[in-house]
Image (cartoon, rainbow, N blue to C red):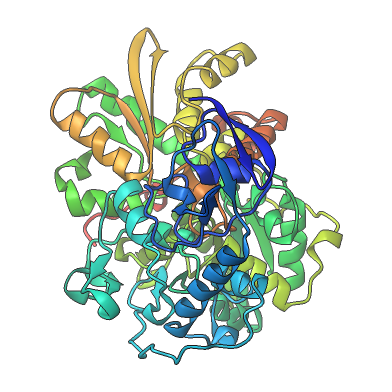
Amino acid sequence: MAGTMVIDGQRVQFDKEKNILDVIRKAGIDLPTFCYYSELSIYGACRMCMVEDERGRPMAACSTPPKDGMVIKTNTPKLQKYRRMVLELILSSHDRDCTLCEKNGKCKLQELAARFNIRNMRFEPSCKQLPVDESSTSIVRNPNKCIMCGDCVRMCEEVQGIGVLGFAYRGSKIKVTTAFEKPIADVECVSCGQCAAVCPTGAIVVKNETYKVWSVLNDKTKRVVAQIAPAVRVALGEEFGLAPGAIVTGKIVAALRKLGFDEVYDTGLAADLTVMEESREFIDRLGKKEDLPLFTSCCPAWVKFAENRYPQLLKNISTCKSPQQIFGSLIKEHYSKIDRAEGKETVVVSIMPCTAKKYEATRPEYTNNGVPDVDVVITTQELALMIRQAGIVFGELEPESLDMPFGLSSGSGVIFGVTGGVAEAVIRRCLKQKSPGVLKDISFSGIRGMDGIKEAAVDIDGQKVNVAVVNGLRNVDKLVKSILSGEKKYDFVEVMACPGGCIGGAGRPIPQSAKVKTHRAKGLYDVDRAAQIKRSEENPIVMALYSGLLSDKRHLMHRCLDK
């Protein structure tokens, strides 16, 4: 319902805003919150967004719907005092060793404490040191930093549908934990890291493995090769003040060379190889009418989710390795003879938007004689940290080009970073008609966009093919149930665990609003639009690999399922 409110003496119109908080922010007032995310349910736990009406009655702005004629005050002396007291109470039960915290400088609690000029504590510290959970390959949980905002609980349950985190106990003993307080590695966590993406403090953070990278960079017996995932190029700039979606590929390459990497390549090349293998597998299954729909295998959090909940679907998941793992095995094979001759060891470092890629790299099927395809995985956030540690002024870097021969990718390989990109790339490969008009038709087929579940029907050689694109694991669960019940029938299903796909991965710069993700997606589509090579099969490096290194080693691109 549309209407007009008066906020701090300013008349503000509202229409689709669902609560007073959204209207206040529309008025240009940054009302503080801890527990409010527009993508999650209203929780109202932190009480930082309390406001007053014209009679001085307090109300939570996040949980109060707007009404025509309302008069709201956001910054009275009483409200200022109230917010300071809330912050002091939170801080009294919080581990305040900020200098050693992974979120130092990016912590919402730290930011608000500075904003409200809290320099002294009236309350005695009430926190007891609890053990830190480092069992996961992807995230670290520090309950001593938790402020009970519930963001991680709602994200895990409402958006991802996993529900491995919840509140336990009551009163002063309340805590966020797993069932029976098990280590996070011992529950059905899929390592998507979305809990870390919404945590306002250092209670859940991405596991920092930059020390491993520094170690190999300073070892002269190592050949250190970097691969950059497509989605990294449109997000890293945010860490250095650039707009979301700004394409900074050349600056990333320059930064990595300054850090000491020997070779810098694009994971997009491996994405092109994934397209080639996955489309071949899809056409084969489609012809035989076996094990359909074919589910994509690029997202390790989705694969883990299927293993946990829908093992009967594992035969439907493509046998292709993810682009990260294909690239790792390709590089290790390429340098194997050279390493023996030079007495070196090639180390593959992946720079990914995703925390689950850390988990994926440790899986036993992605090793060869005990040697992992990928040695270290760092996220976009971790790369930004390394750049700062090295004192590199990112904004002043002159762009440099990727190394050859593995630095060339098609537009299809680049759009892997956004939901719908894998499906679009595979369709491009499968269609015999390759005109620019056909490409445009595919982009308007319903595959693109940020919707949680999308459907499209494509004609491939006179056969109607039903395609589904899904992102966010709760949406995945809904779609899978509709397939198993017979309600829906698809031939090809692209799955991404994170909302928006890799552009919404938990290793990205935070915050990650829907608007930010849209800008990142546009950045990737802009790269594709400007690319001279649009389809994976047109990439000359891909064709050279098939006639050379991969001519008798296509197994390097497929999972060894018996490990």
